[in-house]
Image (cartoon, rainbow, N blue to C red):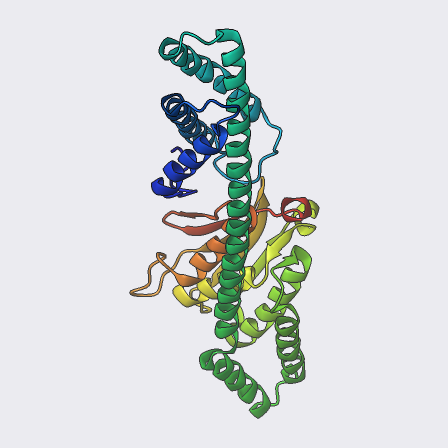
Length: 334
């Protein structure tokens, strides 16, 4: 069947179900009982049941729920009438003593009943399958979301990150830097925001940028003029949504794989471009560093794929590396 990859039903169940329907639909009525005639009726009803089974199964929608009263129902009933008419004509050849109009009408009613039973069964089976698939997909999305959040939090609280910031703070205290208190406040703000948003799937872009600026403040204290950040987002994009920690992960990737020093400053830009939020940095790769197969970008891509059914786009030339994030508006996912 067309949907065999999606809705697998054992062949034995199809044939045994068709036989049961054939027997039930051909139960003998008034005596006398004619065994040969009954066997032919069972064969015809079984054959028609198989047709109804495979025809309706083939026309199941590829995905998602479908209404009960749809075009495929009426089309299936109409095609079934034609098929049963052919089978009634063949039966008439075997038993010419019966009045054909009356017999064909009886068989047509029998065929309509079989067709409806099969259609209802497959419709309910398909609806149950799509519901279970949606639940499984939701659980998988939640699992991947938690995995992405775990990866984000791991990068935030890993020993290197903590050590670097504590070392910076120590240096500021030793030289009695007047900005030490401000650094402590920014460090606390960053962890407070991270903990507040760690269970969320999406954040308004303005809140994501607020968290990014707190993170950037920590980086500036450590790298000084070695890094700069410019944000130029349109008002519409500022009102959009971004998967939590996305911008911070991208900035982390920039620093991880590029030189960032006063001699080789790293410039990061976040700006609007059509229906995308673009994160761009000048390309000055560290030795043995390549932009490929990175877990951070893969996590971000999977989250956009599950939220928006779109992927992020990567672009690289001799001077810049860009990540295009599709804009997520509230009505895209609510």
